[in-house]
Length: 342
Image 1 (cartoon, rainbow, N blue to C red):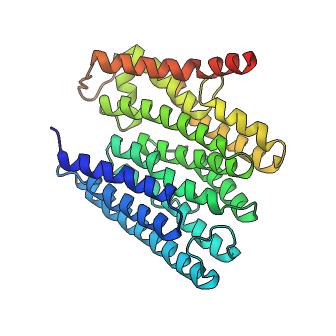
Image 2 (cartoon, one colour):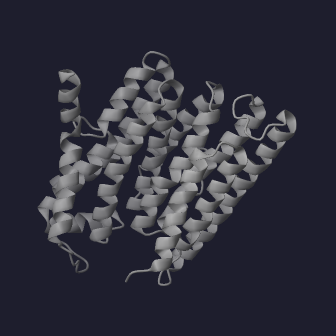
């Protein structure tokens, strides 16, 4: 059923992000973040889902706390510099406080305490918005103030470690994707050290693969590993597409998800090998729990089904899934051919 209110709030959600990233002053960025927050809360709430109300309250409290810290840091910076739009000549301690508030908003470690818990009570479409669109404004603002310091090194390393280890023992697909998102945040933040344009490529590819996975999970109403295994027993094509997209999200060559990591490895190998080695090792752990799912679904085949599972087999949706999976499979190959050609 079409809901005009959700459409209005979705439009203001997008406009809040655009206001933040296009503003010339700190107060403008704060105002855009608040519009984005207040628009996302009504989208989260569902009448027939009691967990959505809990998630929306938790999300509001965390984001309001981060916005308060962000606003007070802006005011302190204005009193010291007498400039409302000064984003360069900033005190180091104030910069760390502002960056911490922005990292809390995007769910980067060690400020990630709210991210997996809140995403567990959301539906797949809202989870997709939280994992992709809600990270644009904080990351863009963070790129204005981020400097080559030990603080950002610590954030990159701890996000990479927690994002990889946290998803190892998860049976919930939403929590697994949430911890994987934290690991991907560390790779995105590392692009700010050398080449910020790589962040755009990484974010687009990450969003494309996440859209493919979440739409498939939403279409077949899958939230846990056991449900996914039962669905895979019924449809081998869907199993094949799910496994390919999961391995692509984990960054396994020759899939599209390996392309941005490949380019970031080339850039970081020139400047900071220590962070690069840690990120690669932790990315292998992230890839391990995707490979474990693929191995279990392919090698372990059993017919014990505890409940009936109705598959919503829509021809148009299946064609779209196949097209997105084809892009995920051939993206790296096409990029390599195009790059070598030119």
